[in-house]
Image (cartoon, rainbow, N blue to C red; front, side):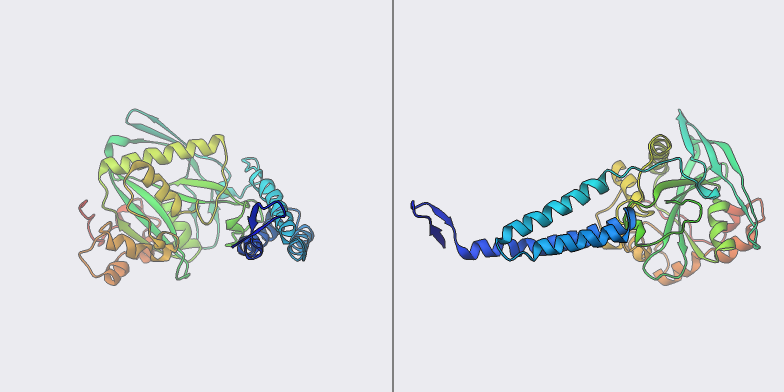
Length: 340
């Protein structure tokens, strides 16, 4: 129903005027919560975060007229959001050694030249030999693509990496990670804010698998993916473009939409080779099940048996010092499945 003013014009009824602010309340409270954490994590700190929360909640608590409080709270949130969106990533921080250099990947015809490829050597006692190399690859020799899954015991979260196989027996691995500064560690909460720059580790496969199995004590599983050589090459060239863009213009990592798994999907979607969205893309500890269901990994074995057979942790530790590390890593694995 509507009321009428003295001139007879219709105006919203009392119930509608009371209901509108109430409908806005949940998103505003969510915005206040997000803004408070953003100020605490990315901004001046807890004092500013507390002041923002108090002002926003006080505005919402204004009894009459209710819409003014809602508008004031919305304006405060908008100010914080604009500030947060203007935070800029950088390439000139005091980085940890393993992310200190930015790779570039130059494509000229069938030749791919990688500069600052990481090939660190890790010892069980924690000693690290830093090696940054330049390598060239023949893109016409791409024969396949493999998925590496780093598992540190968190049931729902894993780290995913890709490794390209070439006809000459070499592998080129890439891991999408956070670029951390000296003294900085990863935080799941901070990963949702603007705390870490996005970093593509372009590396020797022994480096990426070794740092997890030899140094960190993680488990690693390896799956041969059902993609054609042309699809694998196109994905590698897509990665090369992003690697070069990050070398010129840094970008923020985000644990929701620009993490190790969602970034892979973004590349695949761009090339038109990705399947429909599924919740297991975010809860990527269940992603192996999704790949099995879609026939992207071998289905000749029951899933749990395949998962156990794909655990290359012990093989990686035993073969770490061997020149044929990548070949030894794949011994006994199911063959690459055919593309459906």
